[in-house]
Image 1 (cartoon, rainbow, N blue to C red):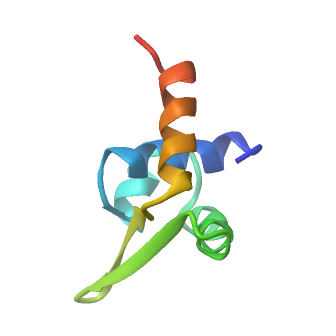
Image 2 (image 1 turned 90 degrees about the vertical axis):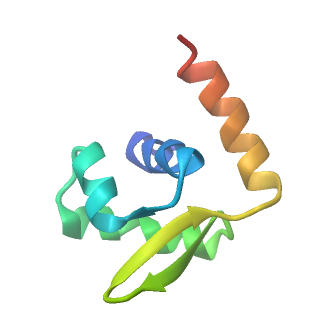
Length: 79
């Protein structure tokens, strides 16, 4: 979560489940560069994925990750 782009991905997934294409539209990374942090998040237990036809949908896992990411979102993205 020290990386700004990875944190942005988590903030987006905090809102709702998303495909790589949806994340790509919102984050300033190429699709191949975007695919690199997702396995890091999965390995850390922060993100899970589900197959939706040919697409993979990513979501935050329940547990401490959501609480931490929610607190960071509230601190850094407050209106």
